[in-house]
Length: 351
Ligand SMILES: Nc1ncnc2c1ncn2[C@@H]1O[C@H](COP(=O)(O)OP(=O)(O)OP(=O)(O)O)[C@@H](O)[C@H]1O
Ligand SMILES: [Mg+2]
Image (cartoon, rainbow, N blue to C red; front, side, top):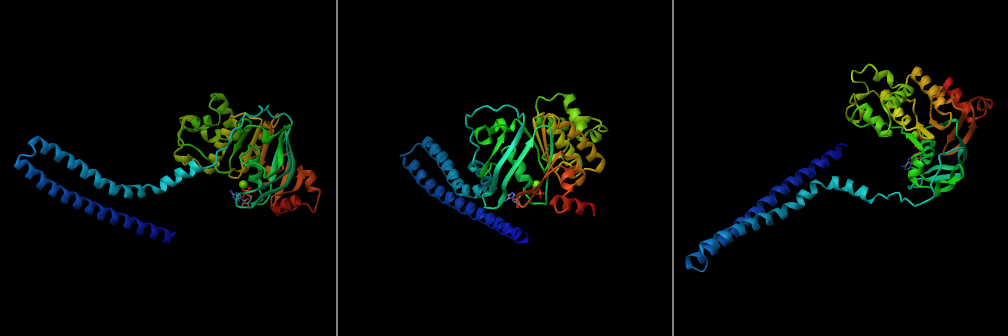
């Protein structure tokens, strides 16, 4: 860090020095050329070869040419000042776009999402998931559990197609994910991310980002379910209160509840929440899990979680480790196996 700062300061000084040198040289050249042209044109005016009008026009042209010629030299320096920003713009221009193909339309998920021998490796070769065979049935609350770096987020990213299997297939009912459009999948899946991204607008505008057509009643209901109402209610302006840059006038738990409410106003058949209870107190957590269980009736809710209190509410628990599924079942079934990884994980938390 210290080295980077020193390097940055050194480069800044070099740029300023070059700026001064180039300006000085360019101005000196302009002055010299002007002096020569002044002598030549005045000589011609005195001898009668040029009129006084010619002199005025020529002089104006010299001034313009000289000014622009010196600006060309400084142009390179101006460009250097913006290189960092330009690099970021080019990064996005070069980013591979998701190619939409005119494929078959997709009906809302009715039965289940099925993973068939799904493996995934990141571009740098790191293995994210290996040979996942799973079923996520509609009407269930599924919890994905496992140590940090186990591949929980990677697995959840497969549901809205943010990541696609390197090998294997994912089926939405009978439809292979390879044969459907990204927009069709994303319209069915709501993903509440592990990091909260809020705009520096009002609470209401942040909720509308999830669903621009949501009515005020729907928004208030979503806030009630996520427990966000608890801090919105006492605010004088209610849901019209601005939340500051990136939501920084809210606490982490409040941001989390607002992000969940934003997910809930979308009413999609699939709801994925990455660590939704990490920053909540036990009371809010219990209320949220009860609401999510209710919400799971008629849709699929997938929750990534570390806390036992969140996990045990799930209808199905998927225990991941090193990118592999090591245990699947509900809490009672998995607890019966004394050697099971889930049982060990629970015992560790209880201790
Ligand atoms: N963009 C990436 N490029 C390369 N490897 C990655 C990338 N994202 C994640 N990984 C690797 O994939 C593995 C699984 O990561 P993942 O984010 O799915 O873990 P996780 O189970 O969600 O962990 P946590 O509980 O900390 O959120 C990790 O070993 C991680 O280092
Ligand atoms: Mg994660």
